[in-house]
Length: 260
Image 1 (tube, rainbow, N blue to C red):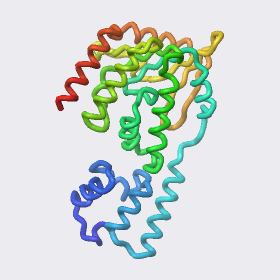
Image 2 (cartoon, helix red, strand yellow):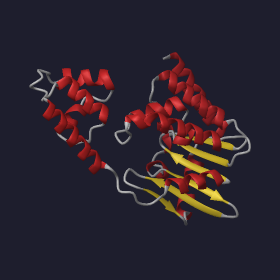
Image 3 (cartoon, helix red, strand yellow):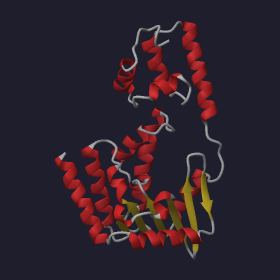
Image 4 (spheres, helix red, strand yellow):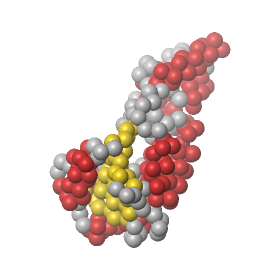
């Protein structure tokens, strides 16, 4: 269809990115069915390729089939159950090599989710708002005790540009100043850190019940006897910069972003 429309390689990719976003090799992957198209992408191809009515209906049908097949099998954690446990937790331990959803401001979450091949564009706003609201419920003066171990590489993964990145890091600074929150940056110089290559969240409920939440592309899991996860977190925490040093690292990054 692309050839019939007279669109050259490179020109079509640039036009799609300008119109609806994406990345240079995405159009080729859509055309060869290596990834499932989203509705906006199908609409763009129909608009630009100008297929016949039958060809357009066929394209829409193939897209529907591909997305149906692309749906992940639902196994493991029930989202509602996890959110209930999150709200009732007395302690939350998190270790990630990117800024986790609970710590994302709305604009940053929107930028992150917009880049995901697993999130439909029509769902981005609601999911971004949900992340920000969940964080507000956790990070409050009378909230649970929260410990966050964040790999330094996370500070280089700032979607949305310098302005949004600076606001996101300002938010981390504000969180770290709360009496219920503790945040450490694990410097890249620490070397291999098990928890950063296998990120997770630990929830503690009274009287003494721990639960690990591990998220994957295909499934999310609970681990109800997470002694190993606690050991991995404590090891990573010990490798991190002090909380005061971590705030200084964040402040320096904010200054750099504001100069960009």
